[in-house]
Length: 397
Image 1: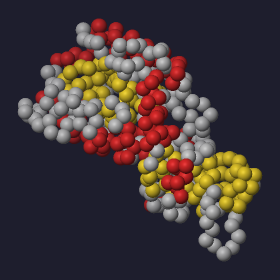
Image 2: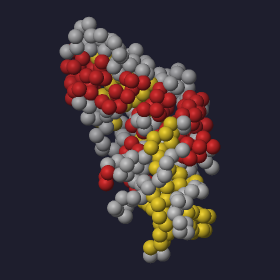
Image 3: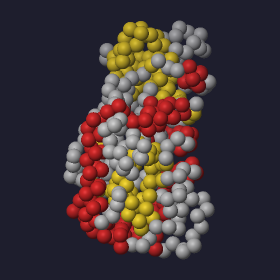
Image 4: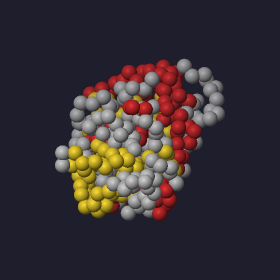
């Protein structure tokens, strides 16, 4: 079911329709629902990598505690948004990015011993009276010690999900065998302040009870580690990973978290997909209907260069048909009824497929297919410039 707000926005797009629509009301509702499930002491950051559209970032910046970024470009977005708190993640931070993060007062989620050494050198080289003008965070403001959370690739426990970050060989975080050296380095540097641990383990997990158990274990591990190294209480950043089933069949049950998470602990969550995905729709107009080798194809003005996730993950993304009354040609309008169609794009590759075999009651050339759950990892991960087609319109409602 398409909302009146969404339909009104799409009716204003000139043909051939190709657009992303993001609903700020849905974004705010998602944040409120998550906050209601988390302990009062938890802080909620938005992971900008899920959707860096300025309007989306601005809308979320007003209702979350801060932003998590993973590049210099995302850091600039966060600084412009004026949030209280910024966390910077990623295994390949450049010196320029580290320096900009220091000036922004960001917390650095450090990924290796070498990164700690580089960060310490940059922090030590700062002018003693560096200006705090333009700082996006109160957590350092460019002059105090740089807050550091040590990212650890723990041996377990395993969580279900689409992408495992820990418990397996990945470029993310330190192996636990390197933790002694890392902690000693951070604590030996006057320009660095050890805040705690970053333990993000998985992306897109739909098993909420398992996630609650992971968070409890992460807190227990962090407390034991902090006691061993003689600091605390540690901030425990458990990352994100709340899952979305883009087909709409399954869901992550926030209710399983309510009352099941440790209270009185400085917990940090970095959610992207879970906040942004339901707030976005990708819409593309049908340019042609054709039958080849027994299959019907709806050929769209758009495709995987705008919305890559279905092709990247190998699933069929469901759509809703938005009928369009206009037909500007003097000949009969092609249509199909009660058939299964493949929704395919305008690219010169047979892999440009968004949906396979979805049954439609009626579909005409000129109607618009609207793909829900497209607000996270949609436009941002797609290969926009392949074949140099025009970009979709970006609409914030």
